[in-house]
Length: 295
Image (cartoon, rainbow, N blue to C red; front, side, top):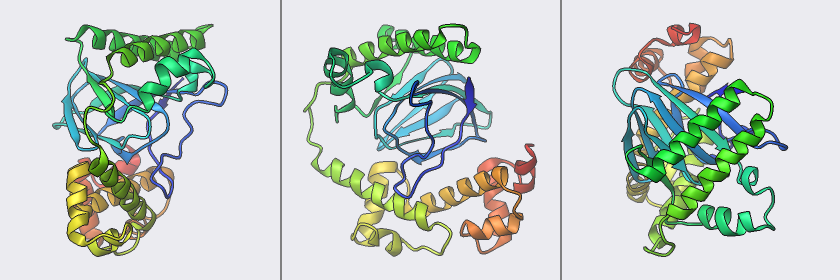
């Protein structure tokens, strides 16, 4: 089964959605941008995506890549990432999010010890941007599309096919991952820890008035250090992220509730309806009312 994309996080900024089931921890998604804008978040699971139409900007921490049709990405476990439409056209992504045990089954076997564990614990490997021009990356993309199609059609035995393709992908990624220990991660790890704390604070308090100083207080740093950390990790400002997150939450509420638009705007931290409506149209290309009815 192919599922629509939606990202909602808990107060730690970690994604709430369960991907797949306990018996089969794999989920395939159809991501449609700009409607399904993918905000900054992280999860324990691994993620793969293939661009099937349009173009998308995928960000993993301080790295940004513009991907086109036929290209894709791999996001490692617990890595901050986001995606946004590039250009005016829509974009379609075939993605799969899976727990490592979908491949290894448990942690007391050679598959986990030799292939899975070294990859998910490799701090030099937040992920890969994939292109069909590189042979091993093309093999990953081909396997991804094959398992996505199997999950869509669900023929008898499709779970075995999906697991086989994921196992093949993990072997390829493991073989081509960068060597461990090539650079120092002291400052980068500190920045990543701080940005997660500050994103967590924003996501828990976006409905009230917030200043840069408020956001900085979440990890006991100065306003200037807060601004530097945002630029260094997710290449934006605290206030720009706050506004974007408020708009994303408003979009979710427009889809999932029947609340008045003015009430949604206020609950998401917008005190002026005209400013909310204008900002929403800039971000989503339509008014809140049009978004709600699916135009």
